[in-house]
Amino acid sequence: MNKIDQKRDVFVAIADPTRRKLIRILAEVEEMPLHKLTEQFQLERTAVSKHLTILKEANLVINRKAGRETRYRLNPAPLKEVKDWLSFYEKFWNERAILLKNLLED
Figure 1: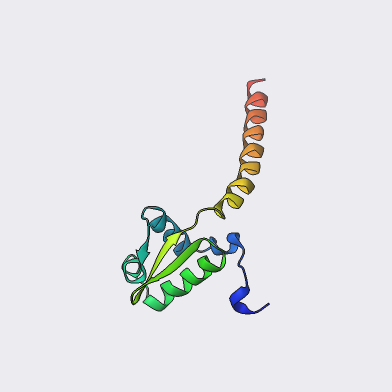
Figure 2: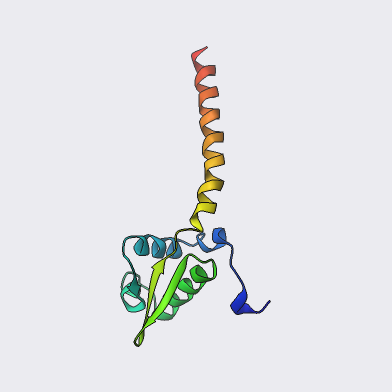
């Protein structure tokens, strides 16, 4: 499989705080050009672009060319995998909290 066809794991993609911030920013807008995204960070444009590439490889971000600029938007569908994974542990800890509460009340 060549590098262009490679898909990145969504958990790897969201592991970085900069990428999580990019996701949050894009969640609040329809789409945003790279130069506007770069303004949100104390990073070079190249660094922001590399983070966006990782998010794109995980299918979390979709880009399109509009003239000379590249515009990015969030594709939230892959985050469902994260939500589903976390929901198991939410249930697990809620059950443990109930058991602990019952123990403390006895």
